[in-house]
Length: 468
Image (cartoon, rainbow, N blue to C red; front, side, top):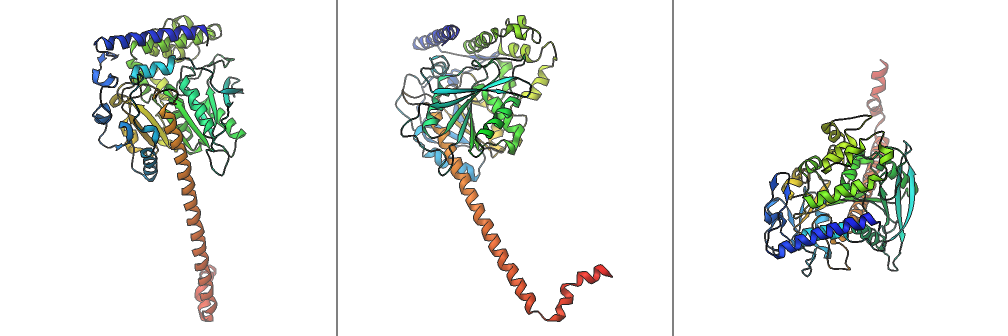
Protein backbone atom coordinates (compact mmCIF):
# COMPACT_ATOMS: atom_id res chain seq x y z
CA UNK A 1 0.00 0.00 0.00
CA UNK A 2 1.45 3.50 -0.88
CA UNK A 3 2.71 5.66 1.96
CA UNK A 4 0.00 8.29 1.56
CA UNK A 5 -2.71 5.64 1.75
CA UNK A 6 -1.14 4.26 4.92
CA UNK A 7 -1.05 7.77 6.45
CA UNK A 8 -4.68 8.36 5.51
CA UNK A 9 -5.65 4.98 6.97
CA UNK A 10 -3.91 5.81 10.25
CA UNK A 11 -5.65 9.20 10.39
CA UNK A 12 -9.10 7.72 9.87
CA UNK A 13 -8.37 4.90 12.30
CA UNK A 14 -7.37 7.45 14.95
CA UNK A 15 -10.62 9.34 14.37
CA UNK A 16 -12.56 6.11 14.72
CA UNK A 17 -10.82 5.29 17.99
CA UNK A 18 -11.60 8.77 19.32
CA UNK A 19 -15.24 8.34 18.42
CA UNK A 20 -15.34 4.92 20.09
CA UNK A 21 -13.62 6.31 23.18
CA UNK A 22 -16.10 9.18 23.40
CA UNK A 23 -18.92 6.69 23.23
CA UNK A 24 -17.42 4.52 25.98
CA UNK A 25 -17.07 7.57 28.19
CA UNK A 26 -20.76 8.33 27.81
CA UNK A 27 -20.51 11.29 25.44
CA UNK A 28 -23.10 11.01 22.68
CA UNK A 29 -21.58 10.81 19.24
CA UNK A 30 -23.57 13.21 17.07
CA UNK A 31 -23.05 14.10 13.46
CA UNK A 32 -24.17 17.09 11.46
CA UNK A 33 -25.26 17.36 7.87
CA UNK A 34 -25.01 20.97 6.85
CA UNK A 35 -26.47 22.99 9.70
CA UNK A 36 -28.75 20.22 10.97
CA UNK A 37 -27.83 18.03 13.94
CA UNK A 38 -29.26 14.57 13.66
CA UNK A 39 -30.75 12.89 16.74
CA UNK A 40 -28.63 10.31 18.39
CA UNK A 41 -31.25 7.62 17.72
CA UNK A 42 -30.32 7.68 14.03
CA UNK A 43 -26.62 7.09 14.54
CA UNK A 44 -26.42 4.95 17.65
CA UNK A 45 -24.41 1.84 17.10
CA UNK A 46 -26.40 -1.18 18.22
CA UNK A 47 -28.54 -0.43 21.25
CA UNK A 48 -31.78 -1.64 19.70
CA UNK A 49 -32.56 -5.30 19.74
CA UNK A 50 -32.88 -7.06 16.39
CA UNK A 51 -36.63 -7.46 16.74
CA UNK A 52 -37.21 -4.08 18.31
CA UNK A 53 -38.06 -0.72 16.79
CA UNK A 54 -35.54 1.45 15.00
CA UNK A 55 -35.06 3.94 12.20
CA UNK A 56 -36.06 1.38 9.58
CA UNK A 57 -39.49 1.03 11.23
CA UNK A 58 -40.22 4.72 10.66
CA UNK A 59 -39.12 4.72 7.04
CA UNK A 60 -42.09 3.12 5.29
CA UNK A 61 -45.31 1.41 6.18
CA UNK A 62 -45.37 -0.59 2.95
CA UNK A 63 -42.55 -3.06 3.40
CA UNK A 64 -42.02 -6.78 3.62
CA UNK A 65 -40.23 -8.03 6.78
CA UNK A 66 -37.12 -10.15 6.37
CA UNK A 67 -34.82 -11.99 8.81
CA UNK A 68 -32.30 -10.00 10.81
CA UNK A 69 -34.50 -6.93 11.15
CA UNK A 70 -34.26 -6.14 7.42
CA UNK A 71 -37.13 -5.19 5.14
CA UNK A 72 -37.77 -5.21 1.40
CA UNK A 73 -39.46 -2.16 -0.10
CA UNK A 74 -40.70 -2.52 -3.68
CA UNK A 75 -43.68 -2.45 -5.99
CA UNK A 76 -45.66 -5.74 -5.88
CA UNK A 77 -44.94 -7.98 -8.88
CA UNK A 78 -44.12 -11.58 -9.76
CA UNK A 79 -40.41 -10.75 -9.71
CA UNK A 80 -40.78 -9.11 -6.30
CA UNK A 81 -42.44 -12.24 -4.92
CA UNK A 82 -39.62 -14.38 -6.30
CA UNK A 83 -36.98 -12.14 -4.74
CA UNK A 84 -38.89 -12.03 -1.47
CA UNK A 85 -38.98 -15.84 -1.24
CA UNK A 86 -35.23 -16.05 -1.82
CA UNK A 87 -34.42 -13.38 0.78
CA UNK A 88 -36.65 -14.95 3.41
CA UNK A 89 -34.73 -18.22 3.02
CA UNK A 90 -31.32 -16.53 2.93
CA UNK A 91 -28.94 -17.61 5.66
CA UNK A 92 -26.94 -14.41 5.15
CA UNK A 93 -29.70 -12.30 6.71
CA UNK A 94 -30.01 -14.44 9.83
CA UNK A 95 -28.83 -12.49 12.90
CA UNK A 96 -25.50 -13.77 14.19
CA UNK A 97 -23.64 -13.23 17.46
CA UNK A 98 -23.10 -9.66 18.54
CA UNK A 99 -19.76 -8.35 17.26
CA UNK A 100 -17.52 -5.42 18.12
CA UNK A 101 -17.99 -4.40 14.46
CA UNK A 102 -21.68 -3.64 14.94
CA UNK A 103 -21.33 0.16 15.15
CA UNK A 104 -21.92 2.14 11.94
CA UNK A 105 -18.67 4.12 12.16
CA UNK A 106 -16.59 1.02 12.80
CA UNK A 107 -18.33 -0.78 9.93
CA UNK A 108 -17.60 2.13 7.62
CA UNK A 109 -14.03 2.83 8.67
CA UNK A 110 -13.03 -0.83 8.67
CA UNK A 111 -14.31 -1.01 5.12
CA UNK A 112 -12.34 2.02 3.92
CA UNK A 113 -9.31 1.99 6.21
CA UNK A 114 -8.22 -1.58 6.85
CA UNK A 115 -5.50 -2.86 4.49
CA UNK A 116 -6.72 -4.77 1.48
CA UNK A 117 -4.51 -7.78 2.13
CA UNK A 118 -3.31 -10.26 -0.49
CA UNK A 119 -6.52 -10.08 -2.52
CA UNK A 120 -7.24 -11.91 -5.77
CA UNK A 121 -5.01 -12.31 -8.80
CA UNK A 122 -5.80 -9.63 -11.37
CA UNK A 123 -5.05 -9.44 -15.08
CA UNK A 124 -5.24 -5.81 -16.25
CA UNK A 125 -6.35 -4.61 -19.66
CA UNK A 126 -6.30 -1.01 -20.83
CA UNK A 127 -9.12 0.02 -23.12
CA UNK A 128 -8.51 2.96 -25.44
CA UNK A 129 -11.66 5.04 -25.82
CA UNK A 130 -13.02 6.99 -28.76
CA UNK A 131 -11.39 10.24 -27.55
CA UNK A 132 -8.03 8.45 -27.00
CA UNK A 133 -8.53 8.27 -23.23
CA UNK A 134 -7.82 5.12 -21.23
CA UNK A 135 -9.83 3.09 -18.74
CA UNK A 136 -8.67 -0.09 -17.03
CA UNK A 137 -10.36 -3.47 -16.65
CA UNK A 138 -8.98 -5.79 -13.96
CA UNK A 139 -10.09 -9.37 -14.69
CA UNK A 140 -10.07 -11.57 -11.59
CA UNK A 141 -8.27 -14.76 -12.61
CA UNK A 142 -7.47 -16.39 -9.28
CA UNK A 143 -7.14 -17.97 -6.89
CA UNK A 144 -9.65 -20.55 -8.08
CA UNK A 145 -11.28 -22.63 -5.34
CA UNK A 146 -11.54 -26.37 -5.80
CA UNK A 147 -15.24 -26.43 -4.96
CA UNK A 148 -16.06 -23.66 -7.42
CA UNK A 149 -19.73 -23.61 -8.32
CA UNK A 150 -21.36 -22.71 -11.62
CA UNK A 151 -23.36 -19.47 -11.67
CA UNK A 152 -25.27 -20.21 -14.86
CA UNK A 153 -26.29 -23.87 -14.94
CA UNK A 154 -26.27 -25.23 -18.46
CA UNK A 155 -24.46 -22.21 -19.90
CA UNK A 156 -21.34 -20.08 -19.80
CA UNK A 157 -20.12 -18.49 -16.55
CA UNK A 158 -21.74 -15.12 -15.98
CA UNK A 159 -19.58 -11.98 -16.07
CA UNK A 160 -19.77 -9.76 -12.98
CA UNK A 161 -18.85 -6.13 -13.65
CA UNK A 162 -17.77 -4.39 -10.42
CA UNK A 163 -17.72 -0.58 -10.21
CA UNK A 164 -15.81 0.83 -7.19
CA UNK A 165 -16.61 4.13 -5.46
CA UNK A 166 -16.20 7.43 -7.31
CA UNK A 167 -13.00 8.28 -5.42
CA UNK A 168 -11.10 5.45 -7.09
CA UNK A 169 -10.16 3.55 -3.93
CA UNK A 170 -10.27 -0.21 -4.25
CA UNK A 171 -11.62 -1.36 -0.89
CA UNK A 172 -11.31 -4.69 0.83
CA UNK A 173 -15.05 -5.32 0.42
CA UNK A 174 -14.83 -4.96 -3.36
CA UNK A 175 -12.03 -7.51 -3.51
CA UNK A 176 -13.95 -9.76 -1.10
CA UNK A 177 -16.95 -9.63 -3.42
CA UNK A 178 -14.75 -10.57 -6.38
CA UNK A 179 -13.28 -13.55 -4.52
CA UNK A 180 -16.71 -14.78 -3.45
CA UNK A 181 -18.09 -14.32 -6.97
CA UNK A 182 -15.15 -16.25 -8.43
CA UNK A 183 -15.84 -19.07 -6.00
CA UNK A 184 -19.51 -19.09 -7.04
CA UNK A 185 -18.65 -19.47 -10.71
CA UNK A 186 -18.74 -15.86 -11.92
CA UNK A 187 -16.05 -14.16 -13.96
CA UNK A 188 -15.50 -10.83 -12.12
CA UNK A 189 -14.00 -7.76 -13.78
CA UNK A 190 -13.35 -4.41 -12.05
CA UNK A 191 -13.89 -1.18 -13.97
CA UNK A 192 -11.47 1.68 -13.22
CA UNK A 193 -12.10 5.21 -14.45
CA UNK A 194 -9.56 7.48 -16.06
CA UNK A 195 -6.70 8.20 -13.69
CA UNK A 196 -8.01 5.84 -10.98
CA UNK A 197 -6.09 3.02 -9.32
CA UNK A 198 -3.00 3.18 -11.52
CA UNK A 199 -4.84 3.80 -14.79
CA UNK A 200 -2.80 6.53 -16.55
CA UNK A 201 -4.46 9.81 -17.46
CA UNK A 202 -3.35 10.22 -21.07
CA UNK A 203 -5.73 13.10 -21.88
CA UNK A 204 -6.69 16.09 -19.70
CA UNK A 205 -10.22 14.84 -19.20
CA UNK A 206 -11.66 13.11 -16.15
CA UNK A 207 -14.97 11.29 -15.95
CA UNK A 208 -17.78 13.35 -14.37
CA UNK A 209 -19.77 11.92 -11.49
CA UNK A 210 -22.65 10.46 -13.53
CA UNK A 211 -21.36 10.36 -17.12
CA UNK A 212 -21.65 6.75 -18.41
CA UNK A 213 -19.97 7.26 -21.81
CA UNK A 214 -16.75 5.47 -20.79
CA UNK A 215 -18.70 2.67 -19.14
CA UNK A 216 -20.70 2.16 -22.35
CA UNK A 217 -17.52 1.49 -24.30
CA UNK A 218 -16.25 -0.84 -21.59
CA UNK A 219 -19.50 -2.85 -21.62
CA UNK A 220 -19.34 -3.06 -25.42
CA UNK A 221 -15.84 -4.50 -25.16
CA UNK A 222 -16.89 -6.98 -22.46
CA UNK A 223 -19.78 -8.12 -24.67
CA UNK A 224 -17.31 -8.53 -27.55
CA UNK A 225 -15.13 -10.78 -25.40
CA UNK A 226 -18.02 -12.77 -23.88
CA UNK A 227 -20.94 -12.42 -26.30
CA UNK A 228 -23.01 -15.33 -24.95
CA UNK A 229 -22.38 -14.94 -21.21
CA UNK A 230 -24.95 -13.22 -18.95
CA UNK A 231 -23.74 -9.88 -17.59
CA UNK A 232 -24.41 -8.64 -14.06
CA UNK A 233 -23.14 -5.45 -12.41
CA UNK A 234 -22.46 -4.35 -8.82
CA UNK A 235 -21.54 -0.83 -7.72
CA UNK A 236 -20.25 0.46 -4.40
CA UNK A 237 -21.24 3.69 -2.68
CA UNK A 238 -20.78 6.79 -4.83
CA UNK A 239 -19.89 4.59 -7.79
CA UNK A 240 -23.57 3.67 -8.04
CA UNK A 241 -24.24 7.00 -9.79
CA UNK A 242 -22.28 5.72 -12.78
CA UNK A 243 -24.15 2.41 -12.94
CA UNK A 244 -27.60 3.97 -12.54
CA UNK A 245 -26.82 6.58 -15.20
CA UNK A 246 -25.78 3.81 -17.56
CA UNK A 247 -28.93 1.78 -16.94
CA UNK A 248 -31.13 4.84 -17.43
CA UNK A 249 -29.48 5.98 -20.65
CA UNK A 250 -29.28 2.54 -22.25
CA UNK A 251 -32.68 1.25 -21.13
CA UNK A 252 -33.44 -2.15 -22.63
CA UNK A 253 -30.15 -2.06 -24.58
CA UNK A 254 -27.91 -2.25 -21.51
CA UNK A 255 -26.97 -5.93 -22.18
CA UNK A 256 -27.32 -6.61 -18.44
CA UNK A 257 -29.43 -9.25 -16.72
CA UNK A 258 -29.39 -7.67 -13.26
CA UNK A 259 -27.62 -5.09 -11.11
CA UNK A 260 -27.04 -4.28 -7.44
CA UNK A 261 -25.94 -1.14 -5.60
CA UNK A 262 -24.32 -1.27 -2.17
CA UNK A 263 -25.07 1.86 -0.10
CA UNK A 264 -25.83 3.96 -3.22
CA UNK A 265 -25.85 7.75 -3.17
CA UNK A 266 -29.18 8.41 -4.88
CA UNK A 267 -29.81 12.08 -4.16
CA UNK A 268 -26.37 13.15 -5.25
CA UNK A 269 -26.76 16.89 -5.57
CA UNK A 270 -28.32 17.20 -2.12
CA UNK A 271 -25.58 14.92 -0.80
CA UNK A 272 -22.82 17.19 -2.11
CA UNK A 273 -24.55 20.36 -0.98
CA UNK A 274 -25.35 19.16 2.55
CA UNK A 275 -21.87 17.83 3.15
CA UNK A 276 -20.65 14.82 5.10
CA UNK A 277 -19.64 14.47 8.75
CA UNK A 278 -16.26 16.13 8.95
CA UNK A 279 -14.08 12.99 9.38
CA UNK A 280 -15.50 11.47 6.20
CA UNK A 281 -15.56 14.79 4.32
CA UNK A 282 -11.90 15.46 5.12
CA UNK A 283 -10.86 11.88 4.46
CA UNK A 284 -12.53 11.56 1.06
CA UNK A 285 -11.37 15.04 0.05
CA UNK A 286 -7.78 14.31 1.05
CA UNK A 287 -7.84 11.04 -0.88
CA UNK A 288 -8.99 12.81 -4.06
CA UNK A 289 -6.41 15.57 -3.73
CA UNK A 290 -3.56 13.13 -3.29
CA UNK A 291 -4.76 10.97 -6.19
CA UNK A 292 -4.96 13.95 -8.59
CA UNK A 293 -1.77 15.64 -7.41
CA UNK A 294 0.29 13.44 -9.76
CA UNK A 295 -1.66 14.89 -12.71
CA UNK A 296 -1.49 18.54 -11.61
CA UNK A 297 0.76 19.56 -14.50
CA UNK A 298 -1.38 17.79 -17.10
CA UNK A 299 -4.57 19.43 -15.79
CA UNK A 300 -3.19 22.99 -15.63
CA UNK A 301 -4.51 23.92 -19.08
CA UNK A 302 -8.11 22.89 -18.32
CA UNK A 303 -8.56 23.21 -14.53
CA UNK A 304 -7.66 25.90 -11.99
CA UNK A 305 -5.40 23.52 -10.08
CA UNK A 306 -4.43 26.03 -7.37
CA UNK A 307 -8.09 26.51 -6.47
CA UNK A 308 -8.75 22.78 -6.84
CA UNK A 309 -6.15 21.77 -4.25
CA UNK A 310 -7.33 24.48 -1.84
CA UNK A 311 -10.88 23.13 -1.84
CA UNK A 312 -12.42 22.78 1.60
CA UNK A 313 -15.38 20.57 0.73
CA UNK A 314 -16.35 17.83 -1.72
CA UNK A 315 -18.77 20.19 -3.43
CA UNK A 316 -16.11 22.84 -3.97
CA UNK A 317 -13.73 20.19 -5.31
CA UNK A 318 -16.34 18.76 -7.71
CA UNK A 319 -17.45 22.21 -8.85
CA UNK A 320 -13.90 23.37 -9.53
CA UNK A 321 -12.95 20.19 -11.36
CA UNK A 322 -15.96 19.94 -13.70
CA UNK A 323 -17.85 23.27 -13.65
CA UNK A 324 -15.35 26.13 -13.31
CA UNK A 325 -13.04 24.87 -16.04
CA UNK A 326 -10.91 27.08 -18.29
CA UNK A 327 -12.13 25.63 -21.57
CA UNK A 328 -15.89 25.13 -21.11
CA UNK A 329 -17.30 26.44 -17.81
CA UNK A 330 -20.85 25.47 -16.88
CA UNK A 331 -23.15 26.14 -13.96
CA UNK A 332 -23.75 23.81 -11.01
CA UNK A 333 -27.36 23.34 -12.16
CA UNK A 334 -26.30 22.37 -15.69
CA UNK A 335 -23.77 19.91 -14.33
CA UNK A 336 -26.43 18.00 -12.41
CA UNK A 337 -28.86 18.13 -15.29
CA UNK A 338 -26.36 15.91 -17.13
CA UNK A 339 -25.03 13.88 -14.19
CA UNK A 340 -27.94 13.15 -11.87
CA UNK A 341 -28.07 9.32 -11.74
CA UNK A 342 -31.88 9.33 -11.58
CA UNK A 343 -32.43 11.65 -14.56
CA UNK A 344 -33.46 8.74 -16.82
CA UNK A 345 -34.43 6.23 -14.16
CA UNK A 346 -37.82 5.59 -15.77
CA UNK A 347 -36.02 4.14 -18.81
CA UNK A 348 -34.16 1.49 -16.78
CA UNK A 349 -35.26 -2.00 -17.80
CA UNK A 350 -33.03 -4.14 -15.55
CA UNK A 351 -33.83 -5.30 -11.99
CA UNK A 352 -31.75 -3.30 -9.51
CA UNK A 353 -31.32 -4.32 -5.87
CA UNK A 354 -30.21 -1.47 -3.59
CA UNK A 355 -28.81 -2.54 -0.21
CA UNK A 356 -28.86 0.31 2.32
CA UNK A 357 -28.50 0.74 6.05
CA UNK A 358 -30.58 2.92 8.32
CA UNK A 359 -27.45 3.90 10.28
CA UNK A 360 -25.36 4.91 7.24
CA UNK A 361 -23.12 7.75 8.50
CA UNK A 362 -22.12 8.85 4.97
CA UNK A 363 -25.44 8.90 3.09
CA UNK A 364 -27.51 9.99 6.08
CA UNK A 365 -30.86 8.80 7.43
CA UNK A 366 -33.07 6.92 4.95
CA UNK A 367 -35.99 9.37 5.07
CA UNK A 368 -33.72 11.99 3.47
CA UNK A 369 -31.20 9.90 1.53
CA UNK A 370 -33.56 7.44 -0.19
CA UNK A 371 -36.30 8.39 -2.68
CA UNK A 372 -39.11 6.17 -1.45
CA UNK A 373 -41.34 6.92 -4.42
CA UNK A 374 -38.80 5.27 -6.73
CA UNK A 375 -39.11 1.89 -5.02
CA UNK A 376 -42.87 2.13 -4.57
CA UNK A 377 -43.59 2.98 -8.21
CA UNK A 378 -40.84 1.41 -10.34
CA UNK A 379 -41.12 -2.40 -10.69
CA UNK A 380 -37.40 -2.72 -11.51
CA UNK A 381 -36.06 -1.19 -8.28
CA UNK A 382 -35.90 -3.05 -4.96
CA UNK A 383 -34.67 -1.66 -1.65
CA UNK A 384 -33.24 -3.98 0.99
CA UNK A 385 -33.06 -1.82 4.12
CA UNK A 386 -31.22 -3.07 7.20
CA UNK A 387 -30.99 -1.53 10.64
CA UNK A 388 -27.21 -1.84 10.83
CA UNK A 389 -24.32 -1.96 8.39
CA UNK A 390 -22.81 1.50 8.13
CA UNK A 391 -21.74 2.71 4.69
CA UNK A 392 -20.74 -0.17 2.41
CA UNK A 393 -19.90 -2.20 5.51
CA UNK A 394 -22.42 -4.95 6.35
CA UNK A 395 -19.56 -6.82 8.01
CA UNK A 396 -19.77 -9.94 10.13
CA UNK A 397 -17.25 -11.73 12.26
CA UNK A 398 -14.10 -12.60 10.37
CA UNK A 399 -13.34 -14.49 8.20
CA UNK A 400 -16.92 -14.37 6.88
CA UNK A 401 -17.50 -12.02 3.94
CA UNK A 402 -19.91 -9.12 4.15
CA UNK A 403 -23.47 -10.44 4.19
CA UNK A 404 -24.39 -8.01 1.41
CA UNK A 405 -22.18 -10.02 -0.97
CA UNK A 406 -24.02 -13.24 -0.21
CA UNK A 407 -27.40 -11.55 -0.69
CA UNK A 408 -26.39 -10.02 -4.02
CA UNK A 409 -25.17 -13.30 -5.50
CA UNK A 410 -28.27 -15.11 -4.23
CA UNK A 411 -30.50 -12.49 -5.84
CA UNK A 412 -28.62 -12.79 -9.14
CA UNK A 413 -29.13 -16.53 -9.09
CA UNK A 414 -32.84 -16.00 -8.40
CA UNK A 415 -33.05 -13.55 -11.32
CA UNK A 416 -31.41 -16.08 -13.62
CA UNK A 417 -33.87 -18.79 -12.61
CA UNK A 418 -36.83 -16.40 -12.87
CA UNK A 419 -35.96 -15.25 -16.38
CA UNK A 420 -35.21 -18.81 -17.47
CA UNK A 421 -38.63 -19.89 -16.24
CA UNK A 422 -40.26 -16.92 -17.99
CA UNK A 423 -38.58 -17.84 -21.27
CA UNK A 424 -39.68 -21.45 -20.84
CA UNK A 425 -43.27 -20.40 -20.23
CA UNK A 426 -43.20 -18.07 -23.23
CA UNK A 427 -41.83 -20.90 -25.37
CA UNK A 428 -44.61 -23.21 -24.27
CA UNK A 429 -47.17 -20.50 -24.93
CA UNK A 430 -45.80 -19.88 -28.42
CA UNK A 431 -45.80 -23.60 -29.23
CA UNK A 432 -49.35 -23.96 -27.94
CA UNK A 433 -50.50 -20.96 -29.97
CA UNK A 434 -48.80 -22.33 -33.05
CA UNK A 435 -50.37 -25.76 -32.51
CA UNK A 436 -53.87 -24.37 -31.98
CA UNK A 437 -53.45 -22.03 -34.91
CA UNK A 438 -52.49 -24.98 -37.11
CA UNK A 439 -55.58 -26.89 -36.04
CA UNK A 440 -57.79 -23.88 -36.77
CA UNK A 441 -56.24 -23.43 -40.20
CA UNK A 442 -56.67 -27.16 -40.98
CA UNK A 443 -60.33 -27.06 -39.87
CA UNK A 444 -61.04 -24.02 -42.02
CA UNK A 445 -59.37 -25.72 -44.97
CA UNK A 446 -61.55 -28.83 -44.55
CA UNK A 447 -64.65 -26.64 -44.32
CA UNK A 448 -63.81 -24.95 -47.56
CA UNK A 449 -63.21 -28.25 -49.28
CA UNK A 450 -66.65 -29.66 -48.40
CA UNK A 451 -68.52 -26.44 -49.05
CA UNK A 452 -70.70 -26.43 -52.18
CA UNK A 453 -69.45 -24.71 -55.31
CA UNK A 454 -72.07 -22.01 -54.95
CA UNK A 455 -70.22 -20.69 -51.91
CA UNK A 456 -67.03 -20.11 -53.87
CA UNK A 457 -68.40 -16.86 -55.19
CA UNK A 458 -68.99 -15.66 -51.62
CA UNK A 459 -65.48 -16.67 -50.59
CA UNK A 460 -63.85 -14.77 -53.43
CA UNK A 461 -66.32 -11.91 -53.55
CA UNK A 462 -63.51 -9.44 -52.86
CA UNK A 463 -62.21 -10.10 -56.39
CA UNK A 464 -65.44 -9.07 -58.01
CA UNK A 465 -65.83 -5.98 -55.88
CA UNK A 466 -62.22 -5.02 -56.67
CA UNK A 467 -62.62 -5.45 -60.42
CA UNK A 468 -65.98 -3.75 -60.88
